[in-house]
Image (cartoon, rainbow, N blue to C red; front, side, top):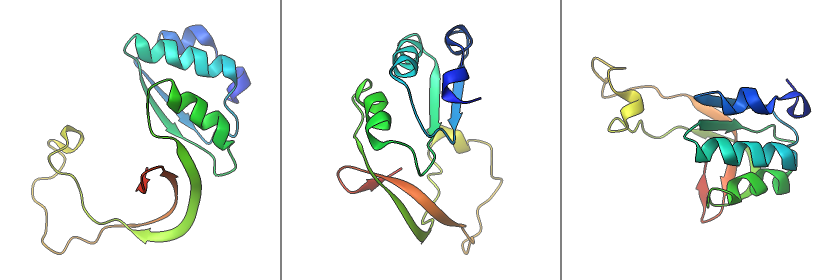
Length: 116
């Protein structure tokens, strides 16, 4: 759904909200997501490269997160897997020493020289 078609009650009733390819984030959606996050909902944002930096940052600011700077379109090689992260718990039986990690294209650069 487009950001203007998202329903407040559906967001607030969800355990997790995945926002993919949004080009705009309205102030109303920012406030709804802020409330949902405050109530324990997990939110995962995958912005469209054409998305408004200001709108993305208005959402990030509500959570005290580092602001989005630019969209980096260069190709990069993923360096490591953070196996200690609980997300990967039970995913791998073993990791080969010469694992061939994928290349990425496009990522959000955030302040302090970090990438998303």
